[in-house]
Length: 227
Image (tube, rainbow, N blue to C red; front, side, top):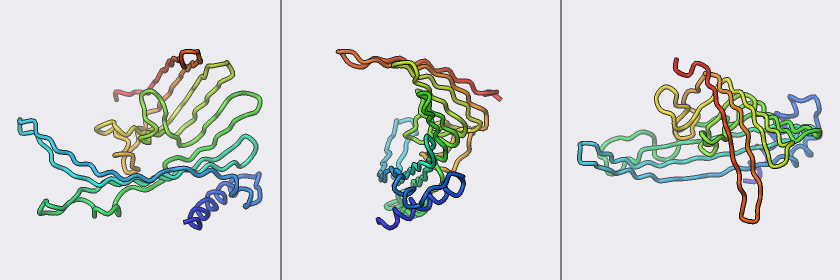
């Protein structure tokens, strides 16, 4: 297991160094890589009958694996790379027929969940994220892998305040239905919304003897959203 982890880290480091002109020794690059993630298994059993010929009887196995790698490549610049595996299989026992998937996690979606560069200049309390990234807003859920491809700028030069500006040319949200659904249950097998998404936000937090208080103001604009 340690060998596999080292191999993955080395692969990320090699990819980052090969695309940057400020290469560093491979050993140092591997040491600087942060690795995080999780493995999750769920068994879902959905039974209901509302008495109006509307009922459901479905059992599913659900697997999810997330691995995120962060590699510093220069002063104030880091590359983030994440992979995601997600699978949901129907349970076939007791049904007297065939179900979808093998029930063992073989079928599912696997792909790149995030791929971005993070820039943090010394001269200002600003973070710039460019690339494919998770969307963490009041109306999206980064934990469900809502994602967008574009740029996000965060500034905290004012005490207790953070200002955000974002522009994404494609994005996906896990729990949207119909043709706008990004992908099912956090997978990579759906479609993205290709309408540009823009956002501005002001976030304020302050600590008191009675706890932490805060407020957020967000504005969103989706070009031609009703087409």
